[in-house]
Amino acid sequence: MTNLKILVLGRGGQVGWELRHRLACMGTVIGMDFPEVDFSKADSLRETVQAVAPAVIVNAAAYTAVDKAESEIELAMAINGTAPGVLAEEAKRLGSVLVHYSTDYVFDGTKQGLYVESDAPHPMNVYGRSKLAGDEAIQRVGGDYLILRTSWVYGARGNNFLLTMLRLAKEKTELRIVDDQIGSPTTSECIAQATADILAQVLAPAGGGFEGRSGIYNLTCAGETSWFGFAKEFLSAQVGSATPKLIPIPTSEFPRPAKRPANSRLSCRRVEETFGVVMPDWKVALALVLETLNEGR
Ligand SMILES: NC(=O)c1ccc[n+]([C@@H]2O[C@H](COP(=O)([O-])OP(=O)(O)OC[C@H]3O[C@@H](n4cnc5c(N)ncnc54)[C@H](OP(=O)(O)O)[C@@H]3O)[C@@H](O)[C@H]2O)c1
Image (cartoon, rainbow, N blue to C red; front, side, top):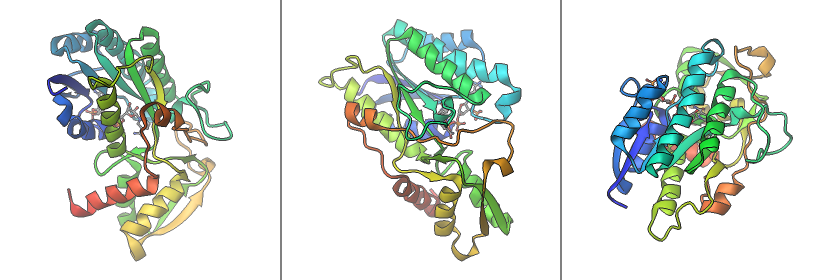
């Protein structure tokens, strides 16, 4: 398995960054990002993949500006909806494996209980619609692929809720945080580690390959909380008595261009049963990120 050529797209993003390290022991990792590769230009993306000819493509690149997507519909659709289909076509042509990431935002959040992979998607915003288009494009092409559907991604680097709140906590005396959207905060580290574990299984000589295991798998940390509950947990740990006053608010008091689902909870039973991947509780994963931040790594 050591001579595998692994193409990681979106290498500078939250998940892409972690992937480069987690996949390094599996082969030669070639990381690429915008503008070296531009997902809004399907032909040049296709040429790039053909030139690299990897055995594994892991796509962590995406248009992730959820609110901005409402006014950049075409761009979001090109990057999130069209480009994944191009990757799937090239992966199939090369006989390669494609790993791609999807989102809880393909759902409208009205389900009572956890979403499973077979639940009908119904996105509430442009970002969700564009990501769903990408999932569907990959499924139409087929081949050996994994679509790992995750939620509320954060880590010690990148653009995310945790780092934004830690910054705001130093500037404000009071923070009003949405308390009626429920989900599972999931670290980029956990996503990358699970990706590596799954790939190690399907690519190992005795691993059995895909054997009908191509498909969508929910992949989030375990447990659930609201954005308010999440912030309370890390602010009390990180800022202590200097924590600003935290005020739980309903979504209606924090209007944004893009609507968000109230329920983002995903059942990870399928990834556990198929690949034996058990994700840690979100509080355990959070503690590791805080440790990394505190060590200044
Ligand atoms: N963040 C979340 O809360 C969340 C939740 C559920 C699912 N996901 C999914 O998880 C995956 C990884 O997300 P993430 O949070 O790691 O994303 P991220 O940190 O925003 O990184 C996305 C990467 O894609 C690159 N990119 C943007 N436009 C591009 C283009 N036109 N061509 C090539 N690359 C481009 C970005 O480059 P620049 O920095 O130069 O723009 C960046 O390196 C994505 O599929 C995302 O949809 C994320």
